[in-house]
Length: 305
Image (cartoon, rainbow, N blue to C red; front, side, top):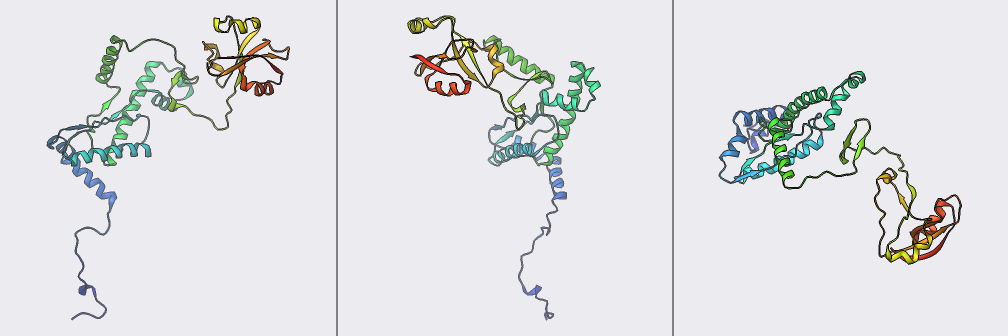
């Protein structure tokens, strides 16, 4: 007989052994311990019947705690690896860390007093950077494992290991022998405070900064045969006008480029303050340049670049 108001036993509900609550904070650790204790990744990556699948890991910097970008990177790679495991492949995933470079050195310097930094030798700085990088690797490895990412975490590659550096030198030596390495000049971003070159990713552009541009004139010292008859009469007071947003590069300029399909003009500068009486400019920009410089420009002749 059913008690009044008790209808539970009259409903045919499915029964399950799952808990009503996920209790993820506890269960995640239990599952990850199960994976590690039973070497799940190792067995799958070595016992699967398929061919070898290798995912090369672009290393993060060992310069601090992980952020969302690290999580996105590693979890997406883990999805790829697990899919390949499910397809029966032997997956080889060796994570690594970039243990060299300015980001790590800056972290070390930030923790030191100014007096300590002034008396710091390169050798001591490298040793401190190594110690910081190795401790950061351990912290990041723990976090990656807590993300549930599978990989050979006990045998990662570190760019500071002697065997890794030796392999780099060997490859570099092969490049030298094959003629791929040469010495030359190249503009680089430079940090006056750190006294080192900077990568594009290391640059910071302050808000509200205005880049100064300048107009300059390069004197024409000689003329080729194609323009000799038209321009010879303007020498030696003839110059090519240029505009640039990178004035600091002017001392290293080697040439002024012109377009053979565009029309250029020799204009006479109606002002005595100018060093050169005649300038070569693009015909279409004559009026604009006159307004910018605040001087009159009269076109004397037009020619192709």
